[in-house]
Length: 343
Image (cartoon, rainbow, N blue to C red; front, side):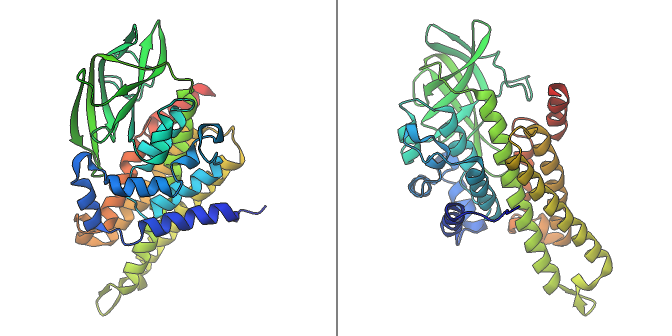
């Protein structure tokens, strides 16, 4: 079977690589220090490359990218350790806002949207309970709203008549309280409280299906990150000398790198399986990728020694991003439990 990228996928991958070229730890810090933690000029550039529109359907003015196209973009962004939250504020809103008038601005990069789904005291529960929709207005609190500090609009899950539906709320409305806070990967999330805030909806998207797709994209990004951390560590042990020779000549480190290589290949195979078998359990695949990507990241940090623990080196940032993605919509343990229940 041919696993090579097609022409369009190669173009999208190359676009990501060009976009991320020259982005280092200093550039990451600079972007995170901006209001909301997102460089809006670069976000606009990301949109102009079609990387947000790729996740939207052609009927909505998007490019109608396949899961394979989107996974290539997610993996390339991971390998480049991109600072932009494409998954959180690009892919997810493009899917959730299908059929909405707000989608045009999101695709163009003029609006930043954030998905507000998590509620206090309801870890990894996706159905809404604390936020209520009554008469076109929302009340309640959401937490862990990734990209929420920079958002122009929120896509919110809310309970109405015993069911969970999606609504759009303007972030700058007087009835919306946004409290930013930093998260593990250096990004800025928010706790958002709605005080009878006017809401548009319900939206037509199936948010359960979108979450499943997002699990695949998170797994693809973690795969790209694991591949990058492995490559950086391999290069490092070839040049770092101890006792008069490169540490890569020590057999124990060679064995650890072989194990890391096997795990990188394993997560890549898991992504291919998910793309070839659309009915594959995305929760289980994300759990498998997360466990192995975290292991590879830990090896990268340890083999870099003291530098690996510092904020000056990219491997630490890669580990933190993997940890955050591993817990998005469920950590490995809860993802496996969801899969077992579904089976």
